[in-house]
Image (cartoon, rainbow, N blue to C red; front, side, top):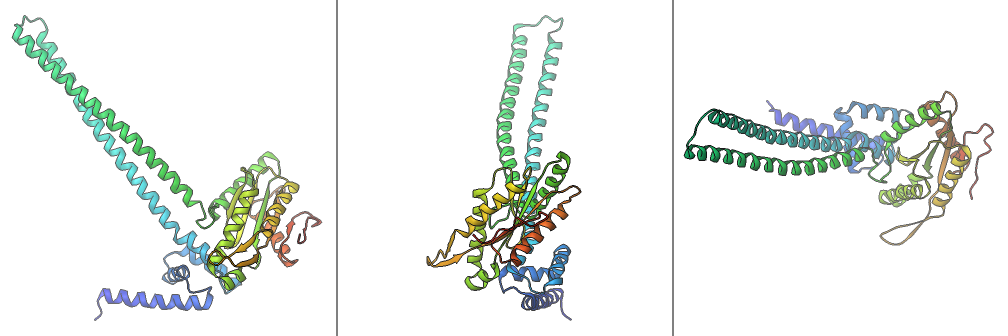
Length: 354
């Protein structure tokens, strides 16, 4: 009979074979991330990720490298951030317990000092004491006072240390929180923060009866860059788009990478004309950059992007606004790529290649 260890090993090999088969059938390529995603899929340990994969493969059986990156960062790598937050929270609790111990010791010392004073007061009350006895009582009071002073100084020093430690832990927690909302490749916000901010922007726009705009960006022919030049160059393309976005977008906007080669810009309080002008600045700036292979200095040509803009309307939701922006972006691609399209009724805001 096979023992438990042997059975576990056989199951691991079986899962590995199934993961490799899924990777061959659905792609995109045999990378460590892709293998991790597919192994997790066949193991069934992350139902939400499995649901996302089923949705992605329903209309298109082949996944892209961007799909794999998004799945990995959303459902697998997120655990690392959660573990960091849990570790920091545990440190905070430990520090609080340490402070409580010091406070309890100080309280005990103060109580004992009070009892000593009470006892000495009784000894002095209505009594005629010899000089020797008075000296003894004074010595006890001095010793008790010195002990309280020493304990108070210890408490003060410990509290200073704890304040510094807690401030450091607070900064660590804040860094962990920011990391959980950040796309590690580009440094922009990730899909989670993008979706949360999109909901808030639409709600605020409705409440204030003012316009807000959403720009959706997709890198043109991104799969070709990955296939021809490799994933490292593909990552360089994504970073380039992120850099240009930062150069042209005002502080009030939210910049995010929410898919493999998809980016979003949230513009609260911004109407159609301003959003369109901003989108065009980003588009023409990206088009004007020459991509160079870092290792060789070889020119890899130009990168272009297609953009879709949606402006809030009465009754809009985050979903409806995003759908319109997506539709405009797809229309820009169908009409030749490297252009911006908005959701105006006449479609007049279509911009051809500069």
